[in-house]
Length: 187
Image 1 (tube, rainbow, N blue to C red):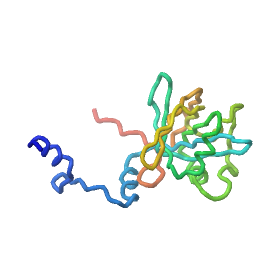
Image 2 (image 1 turned 90 degrees about the horizontal axis):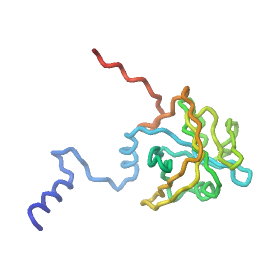
Image 3 (image 1 turned 45 degrees about the vertical axis):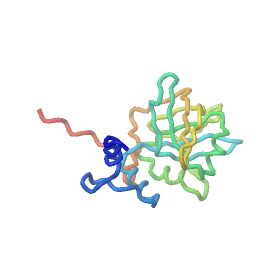
Image 4 (image 1 turned 60 degrees about the horizontal axis):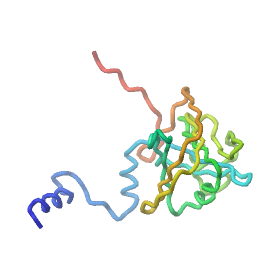
């Protein structure tokens, strides 16, 4: 091993002088760390054989590609909803609005009817949307890629609806938040 190789290895090993810590074997530690990154919350839903089906993802990203227009999310390999949802011809992505915290908990629940009392709209192709969302994206699956204990799913956007009067629901540090305008810079 050359001295240069040692420098690279040393730089990658966390030390107290840098304040970095080795990754813990407890998954909740990394989940908590990743939770420091604020994200919007997406409900991915479709009507499958006449039944509404959906899941919630905070691991959602837009702007993956503009031509074709692609978005992505990741889903746990242990999900029992994704194998059903992926059968839909179209998937409706609703970027939940700032007043959708209750709806988010309901859609993420593993008990009861996830759609009971929700105001939804279904397209002719089966994409299901949550009313009052800040953005709707009507999508088809573009690709799926295994990634550790998750699968990365790329979706191609076929049509959309933007609601400029709705702020998105934000998830940060295991809590829902709302956007606040930044303070103007002093002159």
